[in-house]
Length: 339
Image (tube, rainbow, N blue to C red; front, side, top):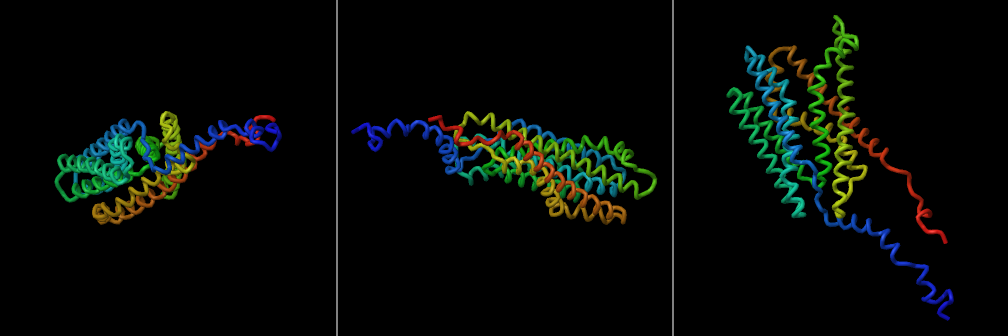
């Protein structure tokens, strides 16, 4: 009687309990991590912070050298307005990277989002205050210096606040990609003149403007590709280093999309900070002459276009690179053992 199909003894061999437990274990772990809201840790944050702070110091030093080399005050104002975007973008990255380095140990000990956000904002504040003090001590004491110092400090604080998010690995990937993009833009300046000649820059003003537009598009395209590849590489590396922590959620395609778009978002955020905090300096530079006003307007438009290009190209590059790592979907019927 116990061997009949309807009995409980006959059903036990056909319904083993070990296989369902093994199949649902990864899902349970991921669900537990998502349910607790555990903050992730950005690997290599200390090295990233050191490089980002060093880049900010280099931008501040180069800006100071350019301003002090100007023979007249009018030229110094124009050069300050021209160099302000590079300083602000470097301050954003330095504030975010410093905040990641400061909050990584905190993320391993506590799950309180408020405490992590306050610590990240405080770290960004320290970076901003250090940069502002350095500007006030080394630059000339005038209204232009105060504008640069205040805007730089505000940018670092905003960068630290952004790094207070739970998705520290995504912020780390975006900061790494943004830093690589900023370094690339400075290095690309050496190739602008040869590329202008290649794109047909001549004696006419129309040919010069056309060549400059193509050079700008080339720079934005290459910067976006670099941003997407660096963001993808950082997230892939962080995913491999986090395999030992089974409770840490693994990044999926939205994380790669956001990390690739991060440098473009940073450039657009830089423009917002400049137009709010550095409005006085920009207006002062535009009021020097009609040519300066046209130049400042053109530079602002070019920076916005560059940020949009880097945003979309970086996001698409990171998403495509992540998609190429995915294997073919496994059919559920193939996982079940044969009769």
